[in-house]
Image (cartoon, rainbow, N blue to C red):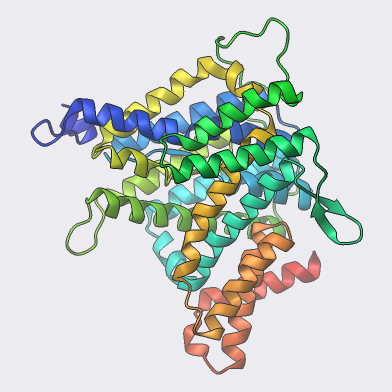
Length: 431
């Protein structure tokens, strides 16, 4: 029965190994339970409700993946999209968090449809390979910058736009978190980011950054998700800007998920001789359904986590690994008081290290060809300087199209890129 439901083969797999692998994956990626509420609460959303929504959405998506795809991977709110949600859509573009949740809901439904009809492959093939790598690297830089900003290590400056902040208790705790994360990752400590967040939170107590309320207890009944559940606002939804935002979300989500699934599948040794990944469509579908459910729960887009590699390294090979991780996300609901104590500065290390890990894709960019390297560079640079993932993608695609047209390399273009470029130009003119 377990083989039919979760792909667990008792002849070649051990139950203990799968459970340990699932627990290892959870420990490695559980920092999302602290980081996601910290990022999204900057929009005015209730932090306690966000913790509940994050845990439940992660559990739903991971359990769906366990039963549908039978793969040893885990899913949770994307570390790139939650930043896109809070800092681009809500802060830079002025959407309310209720409007942004509506955008996430529509994106999830569209993702289900394009996965069902295999349209995602057309979208993937339309975006140049080097721009895909640049998008991943750019999001990594953007996330790391957010980590430095949240800890007041980098602050605004009227003369130079940004500068190094003062050595306040918050900044000191952020530096400790970053250094500790780097040291633990270098030493290959399992759950390095989780432990760095917990230790930084404890260090934050004498620094006056971590505040423990009176009567605090580490365990409690799950917090209510009611303050953010189904709070959708479709006001002003039918606009070109919103259409482009949804498309940007789809692009980032598709490439993030596909890239992670491919990398993890090779690591797990489950790719066949032709390079095919078993149940990849089901894995994409669990991601899409999880994203839709996450929107109802007040969470940002769901994605497959590269931290699943830690469970694979422990020997996880079936959906039983993912099932274990999903159950642990549900059990974490009772530990909300611990996670809600964590100050933003204590999560800075996790954000910076995630940025380092995502920067890995930059080595795959063809830097010997200027018509490929320049648009990739613009994509990364504009994401960071515009403080917007969407603007980075738009400027990168526009630069690629213009450069190819002006140098006679029009064969490198396709109809999708041309249409997108026209829409981007119209959006910039109207915006």
